[in-house]
Amino acid sequence: MSIRMAGVDELPLLQDIERAAGQAFHDIGMSAIAADEPPALAVLAGYQRAGRAWVRVDDANLPVAYLIADVIDGSLHLEQVSVHPGSAHRGMGRSLIEHAAGHAKDEGLPALTLITFARVPWNAPYYERCGFWYLDDAELTPGLRALRRREAEHGLDRWPRVCMRRDL
Image 1: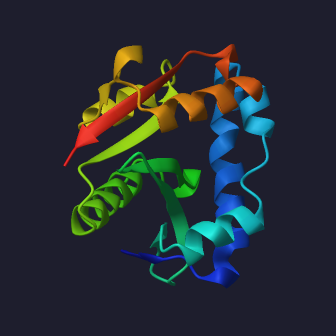
Image 2: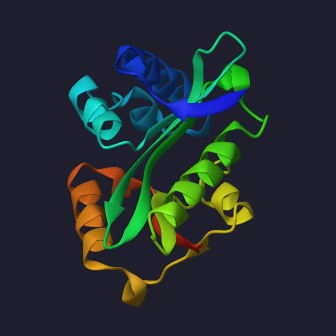
């Protein structure tokens, strides 16, 4: 399996991956998250045009996982990492994160950042195993603070959220 840039024609597949991956939230009482719609095609197309929408593909060259990222306050911010449940637990997400880290290094960016659920096993605890650490409020950059405010406006603070960072 390899990693490559997502094709424009594959963006609906990324939405399908997101919907499938989101179903795991039902099992832990976070049905509102499971029901949340994936990013709109226009949003995904923006990441693709910016060169920050990567897919991990199967042997048939079809996406089974994806990662989209922004540049926030001089770091590569992982906006979304999703793996189709049929391909989970095989290192897909980690390989995408490592690919994004290589891209960030190539671009001269010093770190990866993300915002995630603190108590969901495949969120913050997983990212800790990938080398990220928790940022306290004093360490948040203006861009991360703005993202947290937008998340709160959308109700994501119903569950504990954390900002994390990994230096490169």
